[in-house]
Image (cartoon, rainbow, N blue to C red; front, side, top):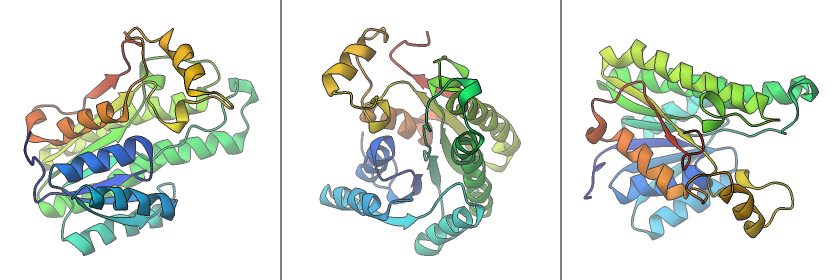
Length: 253
Protein backbone atom coordinates (compact mmCIF):
# COMPACT_ATOMS: atom_id res chain seq x y z
CA UNK A 1 0.00 0.00 0.00
CA UNK A 2 3.05 2.28 -0.04
CA UNK A 3 4.01 4.79 2.63
CA UNK A 4 0.74 6.45 3.55
CA UNK A 5 2.22 8.22 6.56
CA UNK A 6 5.59 9.44 5.33
CA UNK A 7 6.44 12.70 7.06
CA UNK A 8 3.72 12.24 9.69
CA UNK A 9 4.26 12.28 13.45
CA UNK A 10 2.04 9.76 15.24
CA UNK A 11 1.45 9.39 18.98
CA UNK A 12 0.22 6.02 20.29
CA UNK A 13 -0.76 5.74 23.95
CA UNK A 14 -0.79 2.29 25.49
CA UNK A 15 1.96 1.44 23.04
CA UNK A 16 3.82 -1.09 25.14
CA UNK A 17 1.86 -4.18 24.15
CA UNK A 18 -1.11 -5.64 22.32
CA UNK A 19 -3.09 -3.45 19.95
CA UNK A 20 -1.02 -0.39 20.77
CA UNK A 21 2.27 -2.07 19.89
CA UNK A 22 0.84 -3.60 16.69
CA UNK A 23 -0.60 -0.25 15.59
CA UNK A 24 2.60 1.65 16.34
CA UNK A 25 4.52 -0.89 14.26
CA UNK A 26 2.01 -0.61 11.41
CA UNK A 27 2.30 3.19 11.35
CA UNK A 28 6.10 2.93 11.34
CA UNK A 29 6.07 0.46 8.43
CA UNK A 30 4.12 3.02 6.44
CA UNK A 31 6.63 5.77 7.02
CA UNK A 32 5.49 7.53 10.19
CA UNK A 33 7.70 8.81 12.98
CA UNK A 34 6.04 7.13 15.94
CA UNK A 35 6.05 8.11 19.60
CA UNK A 36 4.80 5.37 21.92
CA UNK A 37 3.67 6.06 25.45
CA UNK A 38 2.57 4.12 28.50
CA UNK A 39 3.37 3.57 32.16
CA UNK A 40 5.87 0.72 31.71
CA UNK A 41 9.12 2.03 30.30
CA UNK A 42 10.58 -1.41 29.64
CA UNK A 43 7.59 -2.45 27.50
CA UNK A 44 7.87 0.80 25.56
CA UNK A 45 11.54 0.20 24.91
CA UNK A 46 10.71 -3.24 23.57
CA UNK A 47 8.17 -1.73 21.18
CA UNK A 48 10.76 0.77 19.94
CA UNK A 49 13.32 -2.01 19.55
CA UNK A 50 10.95 -4.11 17.44
CA UNK A 51 10.00 -1.15 15.25
CA UNK A 52 13.62 -0.23 14.64
CA UNK A 53 14.52 -3.85 13.86
CA UNK A 54 11.80 -3.73 11.20
CA UNK A 55 13.32 -0.61 9.64
CA UNK A 56 11.00 1.96 11.21
CA UNK A 57 11.61 4.93 13.48
CA UNK A 58 10.13 5.34 16.94
CA UNK A 59 10.83 6.71 20.38
CA UNK A 60 9.15 6.44 23.76
CA UNK A 61 7.81 8.79 26.42
CA UNK A 62 6.60 7.31 29.70
CA UNK A 63 3.31 8.80 30.92
CA UNK A 64 0.09 7.92 32.73
CA UNK A 65 -2.92 9.18 30.77
CA UNK A 66 -5.04 9.41 33.92
CA UNK A 67 -2.85 12.29 35.17
CA UNK A 68 -3.40 15.60 33.42
CA UNK A 69 0.11 17.04 33.90
CA UNK A 70 1.66 13.85 32.52
CA UNK A 71 -0.52 13.97 29.40
CA UNK A 72 0.33 17.61 28.86
CA UNK A 73 4.04 16.75 29.20
CA UNK A 74 3.68 13.79 26.83
CA UNK A 75 2.14 15.83 24.03
CA UNK A 76 4.52 18.75 24.55
CA UNK A 77 7.52 16.39 24.47
CA UNK A 78 6.28 14.78 21.27
CA UNK A 79 6.11 18.19 19.61
CA UNK A 80 9.43 19.29 21.10
CA UNK A 81 11.17 16.24 19.62
CA UNK A 82 9.47 16.16 16.25
CA UNK A 83 8.08 19.63 15.64
CA UNK A 84 4.42 18.72 15.29
CA UNK A 85 1.68 16.17 15.96
CA UNK A 86 -0.33 14.90 12.99
CA UNK A 87 -2.09 11.78 14.29
CA UNK A 88 -2.95 10.33 17.69
CA UNK A 89 -4.23 6.88 18.60
CA UNK A 90 -5.59 7.10 22.16
CA UNK A 91 -5.37 3.42 22.98
CA UNK A 92 -4.38 3.35 26.67
CA UNK A 93 -6.92 1.60 28.88
CA UNK A 94 -7.47 -0.92 31.64
CA UNK A 95 -10.01 -3.68 32.16
CA UNK A 96 -10.25 -3.51 35.93
CA UNK A 97 -11.53 -6.37 38.07
CA UNK A 98 -14.82 -7.75 36.68
CA UNK A 99 -17.61 -8.03 39.25
CA UNK A 100 -21.39 -7.65 39.42
CA UNK A 101 -22.38 -3.99 39.46
CA UNK A 102 -23.36 -3.88 43.13
CA UNK A 103 -20.15 -5.62 44.17
CA UNK A 104 -17.76 -3.19 42.50
CA UNK A 105 -15.72 -1.10 44.90
CA UNK A 106 -15.54 2.65 44.45
CA UNK A 107 -11.77 2.77 44.06
CA UNK A 108 -11.77 0.16 41.30
CA UNK A 109 -14.65 1.80 39.45
CA UNK A 110 -12.95 5.18 39.61
CA UNK A 111 -9.63 3.75 38.37
CA UNK A 112 -11.26 2.29 35.24
CA UNK A 113 -13.17 5.47 34.46
CA UNK A 114 -10.16 7.67 35.19
CA UNK A 115 -7.94 5.76 32.78
CA UNK A 116 -10.36 4.84 30.01
CA UNK A 117 -12.62 7.89 29.88
CA UNK A 118 -10.84 10.76 31.59
CA UNK A 119 -7.54 9.61 30.06
CA UNK A 120 -9.05 9.75 26.58
CA UNK A 121 -10.46 13.21 27.22
CA UNK A 122 -7.17 14.49 28.64
CA UNK A 123 -5.30 13.07 25.65
CA UNK A 124 -7.65 14.74 23.18
CA UNK A 125 -7.56 18.01 25.09
CA UNK A 126 -3.80 18.38 24.73
CA UNK A 127 -3.55 16.77 21.28
CA UNK A 128 -6.19 19.09 19.87
CA UNK A 129 -4.33 22.14 21.22
CA UNK A 130 -1.26 21.11 19.23
CA UNK A 131 -3.24 20.12 16.15
CA UNK A 132 -4.97 23.49 16.14
CA UNK A 133 -1.57 25.17 16.06
CA UNK A 134 -0.50 22.87 13.23
CA UNK A 135 -3.56 23.40 11.07
CA UNK A 136 -5.35 20.11 11.72
CA UNK A 137 -4.89 16.44 12.43
CA UNK A 138 -6.54 13.08 13.03
CA UNK A 139 -7.45 11.34 16.29
CA UNK A 140 -8.60 7.75 16.71
CA UNK A 141 -9.90 6.70 20.13
CA UNK A 142 -10.02 3.18 21.50
CA UNK A 143 -13.52 2.20 22.54
CA UNK A 144 -14.88 -1.37 22.76
CA UNK A 145 -17.78 -3.47 21.59
CA UNK A 146 -18.41 -3.98 25.34
CA UNK A 147 -19.94 -0.55 25.68
CA UNK A 148 -22.44 0.81 23.19
CA UNK A 149 -22.75 -2.43 21.23
CA UNK A 150 -22.59 -5.54 23.43
CA UNK A 151 -23.20 -6.51 27.04
CA UNK A 152 -21.29 -8.86 29.33
CA UNK A 153 -22.15 -9.55 32.97
CA UNK A 154 -19.61 -8.23 35.44
CA UNK A 155 -18.25 -5.55 33.13
CA UNK A 156 -20.18 -2.49 34.32
CA UNK A 157 -17.20 -0.19 34.95
CA UNK A 158 -15.40 -1.08 31.74
CA UNK A 159 -18.58 -0.98 29.64
CA UNK A 160 -19.67 2.36 31.06
CA UNK A 161 -16.25 3.90 30.44
CA UNK A 162 -16.11 2.67 26.85
CA UNK A 163 -19.68 3.67 26.02
CA UNK A 164 -18.77 7.12 27.30
CA UNK A 165 -15.68 7.15 25.08
CA UNK A 166 -17.96 6.51 22.11
CA UNK A 167 -20.17 9.49 23.01
CA UNK A 168 -17.13 11.65 23.81
CA UNK A 169 -15.66 10.80 20.40
CA UNK A 170 -18.81 11.76 18.53
CA UNK A 171 -19.21 15.03 20.42
CA UNK A 172 -15.56 16.00 20.05
CA UNK A 173 -15.75 15.20 16.35
CA UNK A 174 -18.56 17.72 15.91
CA UNK A 175 -16.77 20.26 18.10
CA UNK A 176 -13.52 20.25 16.16
CA UNK A 177 -14.10 19.17 12.56
CA UNK A 178 -14.37 22.83 11.58
CA UNK A 179 -10.76 23.24 12.74
CA UNK A 180 -9.57 20.46 10.45
CA UNK A 181 -9.33 17.87 13.22
CA UNK A 182 -11.03 14.62 12.32
CA UNK A 183 -11.95 12.29 15.22
CA UNK A 184 -13.24 8.71 15.13
CA UNK A 185 -13.09 5.54 17.24
CA UNK A 186 -12.63 1.80 16.94
CA UNK A 187 -14.51 -0.75 19.05
CA UNK A 188 -12.79 -4.13 19.01
CA UNK A 189 -14.32 -7.26 20.42
CA UNK A 190 -12.24 -10.15 21.76
CA UNK A 191 -8.72 -9.69 20.41
CA UNK A 192 -5.56 -11.72 20.86
CA UNK A 193 -4.09 -9.75 23.77
CA UNK A 194 -3.51 -10.48 27.44
CA UNK A 195 -6.81 -8.80 28.33
CA UNK A 196 -8.78 -11.55 26.56
CA UNK A 197 -7.65 -14.32 28.93
CA UNK A 198 -9.46 -15.36 32.09
CA UNK A 199 -7.25 -16.16 35.09
CA UNK A 200 -5.40 -19.44 34.51
CA UNK A 201 -6.89 -19.92 31.05
CA UNK A 202 -4.84 -21.55 28.28
CA UNK A 203 -4.88 -20.42 24.64
CA UNK A 204 -6.84 -23.54 23.71
CA UNK A 205 -9.42 -22.88 26.42
CA UNK A 206 -9.76 -19.27 25.34
CA UNK A 207 -10.18 -20.27 21.69
CA UNK A 208 -12.93 -22.73 22.60
CA UNK A 209 -14.75 -20.26 24.86
CA UNK A 210 -14.68 -17.36 22.42
CA UNK A 211 -15.05 -19.36 19.24
CA UNK A 212 -18.42 -20.56 20.43
CA UNK A 213 -19.84 -17.04 20.88
CA UNK A 214 -18.19 -15.14 18.00
CA UNK A 215 -20.07 -15.76 14.73
CA UNK A 216 -16.82 -15.64 12.75
CA UNK A 217 -15.60 -18.50 14.93
CA UNK A 218 -12.29 -17.04 16.09
CA UNK A 219 -10.65 -14.31 18.11
CA UNK A 220 -9.45 -11.15 16.36
CA UNK A 221 -5.81 -10.45 15.54
CA UNK A 222 -4.14 -7.26 16.72
CA UNK A 223 -3.11 -6.58 13.13
CA UNK A 224 -6.77 -6.46 12.10
CA UNK A 225 -7.48 -3.71 14.63
CA UNK A 226 -4.34 -1.86 13.59
CA UNK A 227 -5.46 -1.92 9.95
CA UNK A 228 -8.73 -0.21 10.87
CA UNK A 229 -6.93 2.45 12.91
CA UNK A 230 -4.58 3.20 10.02
CA UNK A 231 -7.49 3.47 7.61
CA UNK A 232 -9.25 5.96 9.89
CA UNK A 233 -6.01 7.93 10.21
CA UNK A 234 -5.42 8.01 6.46
CA UNK A 235 -6.78 10.20 3.68
CA UNK A 236 -8.72 7.16 2.47
CA UNK A 237 -11.28 7.88 5.21
CA UNK A 238 -11.34 11.65 4.73
CA UNK A 239 -15.16 11.76 4.74
CA UNK A 240 -15.50 9.72 7.95
CA UNK A 241 -16.16 11.91 10.99
CA UNK A 242 -17.50 10.93 14.42
CA UNK A 243 -17.80 7.26 13.53
CA UNK A 244 -17.14 4.13 15.58
CA UNK A 245 -15.91 1.06 13.67
CA UNK A 246 -16.90 -2.19 15.40
CA UNK A 247 -14.47 -5.08 14.85
CA UNK A 248 -15.81 -8.10 16.71
CA UNK A 249 -16.37 -10.92 14.23
CA UNK A 250 -20.13 -10.36 14.29
CA UNK A 251 -20.57 -10.71 18.06
CA UNK A 252 -22.65 -7.54 18.32
CA UNK A 253 -24.41 -7.91 14.96
